[in-house]
Length: 123
Image (cartoon, rainbow, N blue to C red; front, side, top):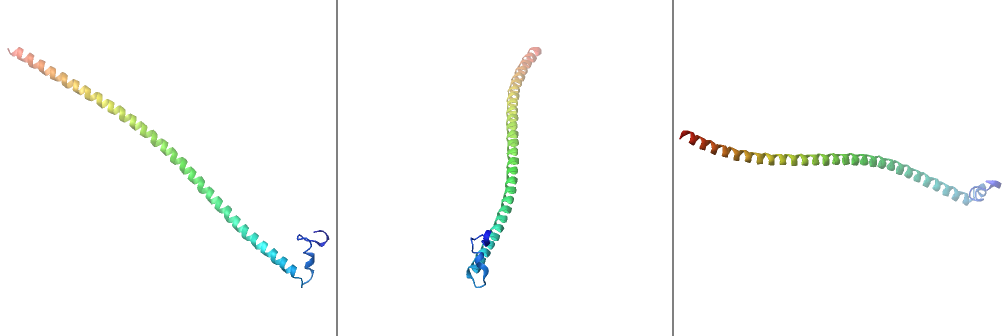
């Protein structure tokens, strides 16, 4: 602001008299800039507040997604273990059925042998 010149290149020095209209328009322009700056500052504060809120929500969603992922891994592991256990049980049941059939066959042969021995002992 050397030699009486303001930020607007000498117009501030021209604002000496009350009848000067350029001073009034400069004040109006300055006032409108200050109003615009205040509005933009308020908008910026609101944008920052919303960004922080969204960031917190995003973190909560990421934590929830991580928790769900770990649940899915646990359920997949449990399903795999259940499937393996079912397979083992099915195999054991198949073995037991084969053993049952073998025991029935053996019991039938023993009953036949008993009848033959009984008939031979009675004669």
